[in-house]
Image (cartoon, rainbow, N blue to C red; front, side):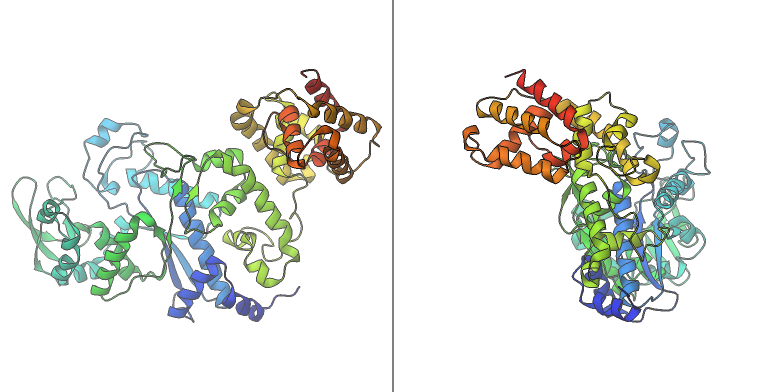
Length: 538
């Protein structure tokens, strides 16, 4: 199927996939883009280390960016990863060394605090380097922008003068949203103390907006008159967000549901400053297995490192892709299905009509990382010879002592040219299946003894396998299993109960794979040994 820019644009204009829905809204505002490129932004607070929230926000924003490029026939775009490293350190993180040293710098901008890891010139520089390494690891295309560099280098000076010129109008927006106590100390602009270097939460008086001159009471009680420009002040969060939109010319930024109110107030402030609120999507937050909001301090939920230990990078992208306006549980139990679903969508992609391709998550994910060779023409390497769920069943039967060599020896029953080098994607998943089985599956497995008609059914299955051709296909094996379950003398009300009995007696789990596929993968003789082991308990 030949896809021209014209056919792609036409399909993109009517696509219901959420990245295209976002791109369509953005294109209504700027159908032909703008000089220098339409600017997409993601924000990051470097008081902590990059995490799965950082990944999902950059990924989702990139998906919209690529959709916009397709929709507009290649209008230029940019993505800025913005670090708010001018923010004052509010508390000492638990997961860093030299905590006593950091405690001495509370309130100071993160970019003016020594690095507790003793590797960089500041704490912010350390965390910014980690952020960039993190984004580079996943192949994102972005420009890194530092809040401190913008403030210190004067890039925000013009916008900051705008804040001072519209000081009262901004107060009129913000004060009604604050409690009585907070109103007493609130100021849209926070000065940096000339004596301690801390970012101060004190009222200020605008002396000369155009000159950037302000007056305030320092921590020692002295009245100070100084410039707010050149890094001698920073804006409060919601004002800072709005000023950044205006100063950088941000056209699109998404954010979490917990920042909904911030987005409303910042949008109003942006209009006061002569700009506008960017287009954007408000996404739902991740939940843990109990449905509770994931918290870095609680440590509930999965980290990026956890997911990549048990599942692939592509499966994480696939899981995050689905409707961002719906909350998602993030725990180990969702990984196997995400892996298999990704590969099902990937296998379907080459044969789909263009409109279906644009609704396929894999179409978007392959374009999120520009380093994917041939991303515009998926074809080779688009199938996984063994589903991850089936691989997990094999590893589960082999037990926690299984090795990757043992797994590959069984894969030879099912996979043509069962060489890890010939199937790199499957080979990578073998290690992840071994880890997943060790940490999630093995502790829960408990094979029960067969009872009642289950005994006769297992005996019949064993006899049928004894007579089967060693080269029998997985489909024919599945038919044998079906036919035994249908026989009335065994008393199964439906085939579901028969398969449930197979899973619980042979595999030790309430759920399992297509038994024909499992038998073909595991082998007829080893499967008969499982049956004999189960019958010995009856």
